[in-house]
Length: 257
Image (cartoon, rainbow, N blue to C red; front, top):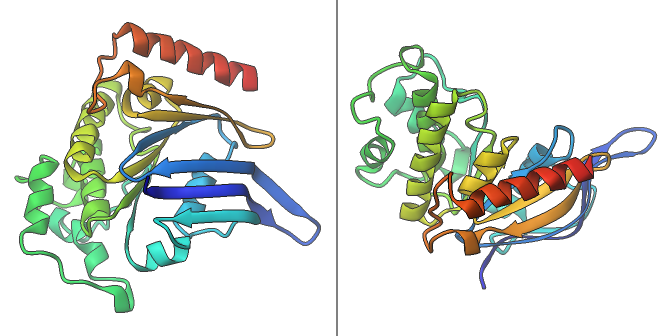
Protein backbone atom coordinates (compact mmCIF):
# COMPACT_ATOMS: atom_id res chain seq x y z
CA UNK A 1 0.00 0.00 0.00
CA UNK A 2 1.40 3.37 -1.06
CA UNK A 3 0.65 6.15 1.42
CA UNK A 4 0.04 9.78 0.55
CA UNK A 5 -0.02 10.98 4.18
CA UNK A 6 1.01 9.24 7.38
CA UNK A 7 1.07 10.73 10.89
CA UNK A 8 2.13 9.37 14.28
CA UNK A 9 1.11 11.08 17.53
CA UNK A 10 0.97 14.40 15.70
CA UNK A 11 0.29 17.48 17.80
CA UNK A 12 -0.51 20.68 15.95
CA UNK A 13 -0.80 24.19 17.29
CA UNK A 14 1.15 27.36 17.98
CA UNK A 15 3.98 28.30 20.28
CA UNK A 16 3.95 31.40 22.43
CA UNK A 17 6.13 32.76 25.19
CA UNK A 18 4.30 30.94 27.98
CA UNK A 19 3.15 27.59 26.60
CA UNK A 20 2.13 25.69 23.50
CA UNK A 21 -1.44 26.13 22.29
CA UNK A 22 -2.70 22.73 21.12
CA UNK A 23 -5.15 22.90 18.20
CA UNK A 24 -5.14 19.22 17.22
CA UNK A 25 -3.85 16.50 19.54
CA UNK A 26 -2.53 12.98 19.05
CA UNK A 27 -3.37 12.45 15.37
CA UNK A 28 -2.60 8.99 14.01
CA UNK A 29 -3.71 8.77 10.41
CA UNK A 30 -2.87 6.96 7.18
CA UNK A 31 -4.21 8.09 3.81
CA UNK A 32 -3.66 5.87 0.80
CA UNK A 33 -2.41 7.28 -2.47
CA UNK A 34 -5.40 8.03 -4.70
CA UNK A 35 -7.84 8.19 -1.80
CA UNK A 36 -10.60 10.80 -1.44
CA UNK A 37 -10.79 11.66 2.27
CA UNK A 38 -13.28 14.21 3.57
CA UNK A 39 -12.74 15.94 6.92
CA UNK A 40 -15.76 17.08 8.89
CA UNK A 41 -15.93 18.96 12.17
CA UNK A 42 -16.87 22.20 13.94
CA UNK A 43 -14.89 25.42 13.76
CA UNK A 44 -11.76 25.34 15.86
CA UNK A 45 -11.13 21.59 15.71
CA UNK A 46 -8.01 21.90 13.56
CA UNK A 47 -9.26 20.90 10.10
CA UNK A 48 -7.65 23.78 8.23
CA UNK A 49 -4.59 23.71 10.46
CA UNK A 50 -4.02 20.07 9.55
CA UNK A 51 -4.04 20.94 5.86
CA UNK A 52 -1.46 23.67 6.49
CA UNK A 53 0.84 21.17 8.20
CA UNK A 54 0.46 18.69 5.32
CA UNK A 55 1.28 21.51 2.89
CA UNK A 56 4.37 22.51 4.91
CA UNK A 57 2.90 25.92 5.70
CA UNK A 58 3.06 25.20 9.44
CA UNK A 59 5.39 23.01 11.49
CA UNK A 60 3.81 20.57 13.95
CA UNK A 61 4.54 20.94 17.64
CA UNK A 62 5.52 17.28 18.00
CA UNK A 63 5.04 13.86 16.46
CA UNK A 64 5.81 12.71 12.94
CA UNK A 65 4.28 13.32 9.53
CA UNK A 66 5.19 11.94 6.13
CA UNK A 67 3.79 13.26 2.86
CA UNK A 68 4.25 11.17 -0.28
CA UNK A 69 6.90 9.14 1.51
CA UNK A 70 9.01 12.10 2.58
CA UNK A 71 9.02 15.25 4.70
CA UNK A 72 6.23 17.72 3.76
CA UNK A 73 8.94 20.21 2.76
CA UNK A 74 10.15 17.88 0.02
CA UNK A 75 6.64 17.45 -1.37
CA UNK A 76 6.13 21.23 -1.35
CA UNK A 77 9.46 22.01 -2.97
CA UNK A 78 8.86 19.34 -5.60
CA UNK A 79 5.48 20.92 -6.35
CA UNK A 80 3.61 17.72 -5.56
CA UNK A 81 0.90 19.49 -3.54
CA UNK A 82 -1.97 21.65 -4.81
CA UNK A 83 -4.12 23.80 -2.49
CA UNK A 84 -7.62 25.21 -3.05
CA UNK A 85 -9.07 27.64 -0.50
CA UNK A 86 -12.62 28.83 0.14
CA UNK A 87 -11.77 32.13 -1.54
CA UNK A 88 -10.55 31.58 -5.09
CA UNK A 89 -7.90 34.32 -4.59
CA UNK A 90 -7.52 35.01 -8.30
CA UNK A 91 -5.35 37.92 -9.39
CA UNK A 92 -7.78 40.51 -10.82
CA UNK A 93 -5.34 41.80 -13.45
CA UNK A 94 -4.73 38.35 -14.95
CA UNK A 95 -7.24 36.60 -17.18
CA UNK A 96 -8.43 33.05 -16.57
CA UNK A 97 -5.66 31.44 -18.60
CA UNK A 98 -2.95 33.49 -16.91
CA UNK A 99 -4.37 32.82 -13.43
CA UNK A 100 -4.32 29.07 -14.11
CA UNK A 101 -0.71 29.22 -15.29
CA UNK A 102 0.48 31.36 -12.35
CA UNK A 103 2.10 28.49 -10.34
CA UNK A 104 4.21 27.62 -13.37
CA UNK A 105 5.76 31.09 -13.56
CA UNK A 106 6.54 31.66 -9.87
CA UNK A 107 8.55 29.64 -7.39
CA UNK A 108 12.21 30.15 -8.19
CA UNK A 109 14.41 27.19 -9.01
CA UNK A 110 11.61 24.63 -9.14
CA UNK A 111 9.81 26.20 -12.09
CA UNK A 112 9.05 23.57 -14.71
CA UNK A 113 7.81 24.19 -18.25
CA UNK A 114 4.18 23.22 -18.70
CA UNK A 115 3.41 20.26 -20.95
CA UNK A 116 2.13 21.38 -24.33
CA UNK A 117 -1.63 21.88 -24.18
CA UNK A 118 -1.85 21.48 -20.38
CA UNK A 119 -3.79 24.72 -19.86
CA UNK A 120 -6.23 23.94 -22.65
CA UNK A 121 -6.73 20.46 -21.19
CA UNK A 122 -7.69 21.94 -17.82
CA UNK A 123 -9.93 24.58 -19.37
CA UNK A 124 -11.85 21.81 -21.12
CA UNK A 125 -11.87 19.50 -18.08
CA UNK A 126 -13.44 22.23 -15.93
CA UNK A 127 -15.85 23.63 -18.51
CA UNK A 128 -13.90 26.87 -18.93
CA UNK A 129 -12.90 26.53 -22.57
CA UNK A 130 -14.92 29.61 -23.59
CA UNK A 131 -13.72 31.72 -20.66
CA UNK A 132 -9.95 31.70 -21.02
CA UNK A 133 -9.66 35.39 -21.86
CA UNK A 134 -12.10 36.66 -19.23
CA UNK A 135 -11.01 38.35 -16.02
CA UNK A 136 -12.13 37.35 -12.51
CA UNK A 137 -14.72 40.12 -12.21
CA UNK A 138 -16.43 38.71 -15.31
CA UNK A 139 -16.96 35.28 -13.70
CA UNK A 140 -19.56 33.81 -11.37
CA UNK A 141 -18.55 32.38 -7.99
CA UNK A 142 -18.67 28.85 -9.32
CA UNK A 143 -16.57 29.76 -12.35
CA UNK A 144 -13.95 31.40 -10.14
CA UNK A 145 -13.69 28.24 -8.06
CA UNK A 146 -13.25 26.18 -11.22
CA UNK A 147 -10.34 28.43 -12.14
CA UNK A 148 -8.85 27.96 -8.66
CA UNK A 149 -9.10 24.18 -9.03
CA UNK A 150 -7.50 24.32 -12.47
CA UNK A 151 -4.68 26.44 -11.05
CA UNK A 152 -4.10 23.89 -8.28
CA UNK A 153 -3.94 21.09 -10.87
CA UNK A 154 -1.74 22.86 -13.42
CA UNK A 155 1.46 21.11 -12.30
CA UNK A 156 -0.23 17.72 -11.91
CA UNK A 157 0.11 17.42 -8.11
CA UNK A 158 -0.08 14.05 -6.46
CA UNK A 159 -1.93 15.51 -3.48
CA UNK A 160 -4.76 18.07 -3.62
CA UNK A 161 -5.76 19.89 -0.42
CA UNK A 162 -9.16 21.61 -0.45
CA UNK A 163 -10.23 23.85 2.43
CA UNK A 164 -14.00 24.44 2.19
CA UNK A 165 -13.69 25.34 -1.49
CA UNK A 166 -17.46 25.42 -2.09
CA UNK A 167 -18.60 26.81 1.25
CA UNK A 168 -19.60 30.21 -0.11
CA UNK A 169 -21.60 28.88 -3.06
CA UNK A 170 -25.34 28.26 -3.37
CA UNK A 171 -26.53 24.68 -2.96
CA UNK A 172 -27.20 23.97 -6.65
CA UNK A 173 -23.77 25.27 -7.71
CA UNK A 174 -22.12 23.35 -4.88
CA UNK A 175 -23.80 20.09 -5.94
CA UNK A 176 -22.71 20.63 -9.54
CA UNK A 177 -19.10 21.29 -8.52
CA UNK A 178 -19.15 18.25 -6.22
CA UNK A 179 -19.94 16.11 -9.27
CA UNK A 180 -17.30 17.84 -11.37
CA UNK A 181 -14.69 17.33 -8.65
CA UNK A 182 -15.48 13.61 -8.46
CA UNK A 183 -15.07 13.38 -12.23
CA UNK A 184 -11.66 15.10 -12.00
CA UNK A 185 -10.59 12.77 -9.19
CA UNK A 186 -11.57 9.69 -11.20
CA UNK A 187 -9.71 10.99 -14.23
CA UNK A 188 -6.50 12.09 -12.49
CA UNK A 189 -6.19 9.67 -9.57
CA UNK A 190 -5.00 12.54 -7.38
CA UNK A 191 -5.22 12.02 -3.62
CA UNK A 192 -7.70 14.56 -2.20
CA UNK A 193 -8.11 15.84 1.36
CA UNK A 194 -11.32 17.85 1.45
CA UNK A 195 -12.38 19.95 4.46
CA UNK A 196 -16.05 20.89 4.83
CA UNK A 197 -18.69 21.86 7.38
CA UNK A 198 -21.40 20.16 5.31
CA UNK A 199 -22.36 16.65 6.42
CA UNK A 200 -23.99 15.94 3.05
CA UNK A 201 -20.94 17.10 1.12
CA UNK A 202 -18.56 15.09 3.30
CA UNK A 203 -20.59 11.89 2.90
CA UNK A 204 -21.29 12.36 -0.81
CA UNK A 205 -17.67 13.02 -1.80
CA UNK A 206 -15.56 10.91 0.50
CA UNK A 207 -14.44 7.31 0.26
CA UNK A 208 -13.68 7.75 3.93
CA UNK A 209 -14.79 10.53 6.25
CA UNK A 210 -12.84 11.72 9.28
CA UNK A 211 -15.01 13.31 11.96
CA UNK A 212 -13.34 15.70 14.38
CA UNK A 213 -14.25 17.45 17.60
CA UNK A 214 -12.85 20.59 19.22
CA UNK A 215 -11.41 21.63 22.59
CA UNK A 216 -9.01 20.04 22.07
CA UNK A 217 -9.13 19.19 18.40
CA UNK A 218 -9.19 15.43 17.97
CA UNK A 219 -10.46 12.66 15.72
CA UNK A 220 -13.59 10.98 17.07
CA UNK A 221 -14.40 8.67 14.17
CA UNK A 222 -13.12 7.57 10.78
CA UNK A 223 -15.88 5.97 8.71
CA UNK A 224 -15.26 3.92 5.57
CA UNK A 225 -18.03 4.82 3.12
CA UNK A 226 -16.87 2.59 0.28
CA UNK A 227 -19.28 -0.25 1.14
CA UNK A 228 -22.18 2.15 0.52
CA UNK A 229 -20.91 3.29 -2.90
CA UNK A 230 -19.88 1.89 -6.26
CA UNK A 231 -16.25 1.07 -7.07
CA UNK A 232 -15.72 4.55 -8.55
CA UNK A 233 -17.14 6.28 -5.44
CA UNK A 234 -20.52 7.01 -7.00
CA UNK A 235 -23.79 7.24 -5.10
CA UNK A 236 -27.09 9.07 -5.05
CA UNK A 237 -27.79 11.64 -2.39
CA UNK A 238 -31.08 9.80 -1.82
CA UNK A 239 -29.50 6.35 -1.28
CA UNK A 240 -30.57 4.76 1.98
CA UNK A 241 -26.94 4.06 2.88
CA UNK A 242 -25.96 7.69 2.31
CA UNK A 243 -28.87 9.00 4.37
CA UNK A 244 -27.96 6.57 7.16
CA UNK A 245 -24.31 7.65 7.05
CA UNK A 246 -25.35 11.30 7.26
CA UNK A 247 -27.42 10.52 10.34
CA UNK A 248 -24.50 8.68 11.94
CA UNK A 249 -22.09 11.54 11.21
CA UNK A 250 -24.49 14.07 12.70
CA UNK A 251 -24.79 11.91 15.83
CA UNK A 252 -21.01 11.65 16.07
CA UNK A 253 -20.64 15.43 15.85
CA UNK A 254 -23.34 16.02 18.42
CA UNK A 255 -21.83 13.49 20.81
CA UNK A 256 -18.39 15.03 20.45
CA UNK A 257 -19.70 18.51 21.21
